[in-house]
Length: 344
Image (cartoon, rainbow, N blue to C red; front, side, top):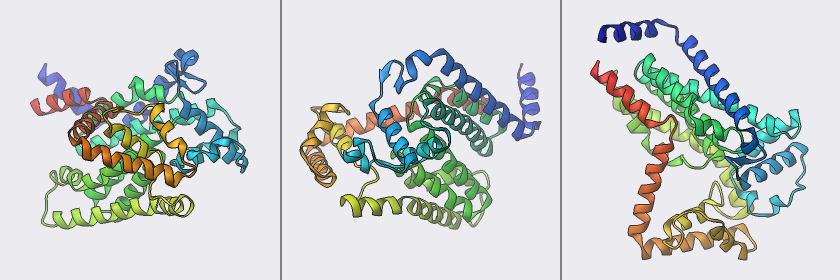
């Protein structure tokens, strides 16, 4: 049995990676189309599994206005003017070509899902081998939650693919000593946070990620490479987000990628809520400006941290575990694959 598995893996390693990547991409597209057809009744129309997603309507109307070059919808007069901009900019550019269409947004999300699966294969292939990369890519290609997000006008598919682009360029820049690749990875991570501002802290883990890569090819210049790649990567992140941050400061007098980050931090750190709810958002409606809204939530979040630091730490740890559990691809197929790899 072991020899058969070994021969099968050897044959897989002999296949050109482009063919494996193409197959994974086609599987991802086919699966997302199947989910779209099978769940059209309960996921189209800006809802996911029958639950309305109010954010999707906001993204759609902002994108439509961006495509027209006019701010007609009242959403712009709310705090949404200071929310991460990349998704509605991308979607508005698409709508300028296709016209406002949920189907066009879904098609773009399907493409993002396929690209993400192929990138996952390529990243893991470079870190380990082709068969482990194929498992990782297929796990992402066939992940239902990821495919379900593609059915709505939502930021997750774009954010996911940009995060994987950042990781791919980081691996490439580390293993091949390419400063331009490291800089491009930072640009991608910055853009990812302009779509989904949830992974900016990942820049701090760059040295640890590089250690995994350099462990396979150790040399005397490893530390210099760590410093160089980290510097180029952070420079890329800064170059991507700095224009938007400056715009936020000039227009709204705040230093934040997305103005709703403050209220989410407050909600998470407060025992009364412990999570995001519309009730939390309503607290900020008493303030006429975005700056006052952000300052209120920042102040209340700091008070909550001072009063109940234990809850905040426990809540943060729980959220980190939940994020890890939902990170694509699902962790259990990868754990099993790594165990088999070590056993062989």
